[in-house]
Image 1 (tube, one colour):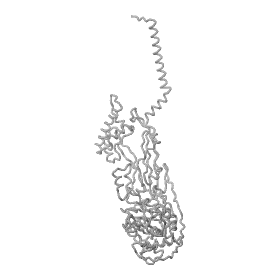
Image 2 (cartoon, rainbow, N blue to C red):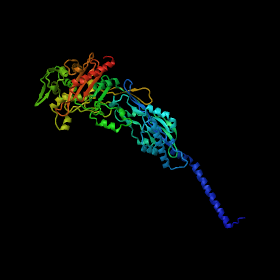
Image 3 (tube, one colour):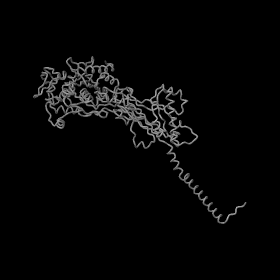
Image 4 (cartoon, rainbow, N blue to C red):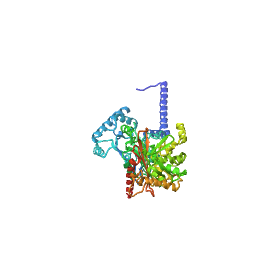
Length: 609
């Protein structure tokens, strides 16, 4: 049967053929345009969509004492992780992305429960966290257990062949091997906040640990390592396919402190469970050998994050274990301020031969100022006034010197100012003056105010660190150092530490005869049978010191701070010490025996005890 077409039908067929050929030509051109002309652009776009950038934090630098003992370190944190791409169910059908996520979540929960039964530990994550991980971070391993012990790892290893998609991952934890020792000085770390600029560079941002207080905060830039990264290839629904281009993170730099852990421990033991502070300084260079604030806390509680229960315990403790008394505690110094008053009076022309009568009180107009406990010392000269801590003598000495002389001497010695130690949030204390009183109370300065300041009372407030630095300045004949806490730094990837030299703040121009008089009086405080600090005496080592008792709280409440400052050995001092107890009977009775215990341990450790 033949097909006969009219001319009109032939014409329509030709037009249809031309149309089909034209459409095919356009399609070929379009495919060429996409695959050849813009192929590179689309390939790059595809690669960008299938690659995820993951940030890997660097390991934090270490902190050592002056002998090389590690005070802040890093420890491996072993975790059990599941690789979700290996847990995906293989289905013949092609379910939706939502169904795939739901199925993977179910299989993940099943795998976690299976692991929990094997290791005998409940999972540390719940279903909402699993779902969140699947939604936003499924290219990364899901860590279901952290900080697992060796026994748990052994149990897992035994069943490892039957647990597809399960592996052990290792992270770095910040640890403090000495526990509460040096907690206030070292500080602690926490998880760093994500920096928005850097976050834009990564799809998955694993944050660093960052210092929150103490040296960890002050030297955070040095201690924090440089982050590395890796590129994770993912499939169309976001599961990991492969890893490429690993850039290793760089560990942070290290610190070497002036702290001597042996002396630090001796200071902690001497103070015991009593609320207070101890600071030990080397008067030859301003090195801080020990800095104790009691009670303390364990900085290990804070890494990576402190629990709400532990945080509440620390905050609600009435003894304030988080408070650094050595650096921030503000105390009236009491009689430990008298050596400075004595030097100021001598500088203002008061004769060293000055002798006064002490009937147990001093009357100034209608005011009566008592000697400590109303004790009458009789005839008292300059040196004996220091030895027995006669308030009556110092009331009159302060008036003869004049307040301006005391104020200027105290200002030059660093009171009312921060010492400049390498720690944030140091307290400056309070050195009250005439302008301060007028501004605060709208009153003029009176002689009674001078009497109070002359015995370390009134509005005067100092820190234990300031008193230790004054003691060191007297011990070394007038060189006021900035307290040096960091002896050396080591930059990342360097082998050697770079020393940080001592800093001299000021050289006090104290005449040698003035210093000799005051220092000998301080020697009598410890070495003489009449001295108020005789309970600190140590056989075979001549030491010089000063005790102090400062009232605080409501008048008549009988609340007292106990103080003692000391330097030793007397002839060539290597140690300058300040101890304060928040509650005491007196400096001599309460602090003297603790100073004896501390110095005995210090010299015994040298082989001289």
